[in-house]
Image (cartoon, rainbow, N blue to C red):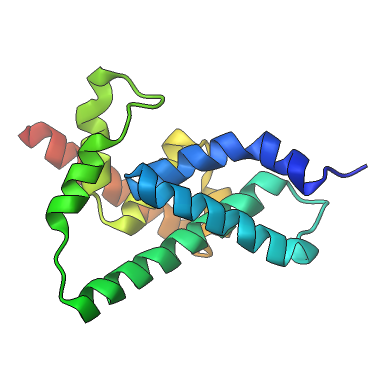
Length: 164
C-alpha cells in the first residue's frame, strides 16, 4: 500500500526542510520554499510515477520552486528598486549551524556565496548524496553540464578558501 501524503511529509519533510535551508540561506525563505514545495507536490501528485523513487522527484520540485522564488525576488527588487544586500547578509549569518560544525563554517559561507547554479549542484551532490545521473534528472540538464558545474564550483571554492 503506497504512503499517504501525510506519511510522505513525515518521512521526507525533515530532509526537505534541510535542503530548503541550504538553498535559501535563511529560515525565513526556507519556510516559504518548504511550503511551496509541498503545495506543488499536492498539485502534481497525479504525475508522480510510483515505480520511481519519491525523494529525487520531490527534490526536483523543490529546486524548481527555489528557482522560481529567485526569479520572483529578483523581479521584485528590480521593480521596487530595493537593494537588500544588508538584510541578505544578516540572514545568512543568522542561519543556525544545523548539521555542520563550527570548523566548517568557513566552507559553508563560501558555498553560500557561489552563484546559484553551482551552489545548487554542490549542495545536492556533496551534502544530499545525489550522483551525476540523478542530478541531471533533478536539474533537467545534461550529465556533462552537471559535471562541469561541480568542477567549476570546486574551483571557485578552492580559490576562495585558499585566499582566506
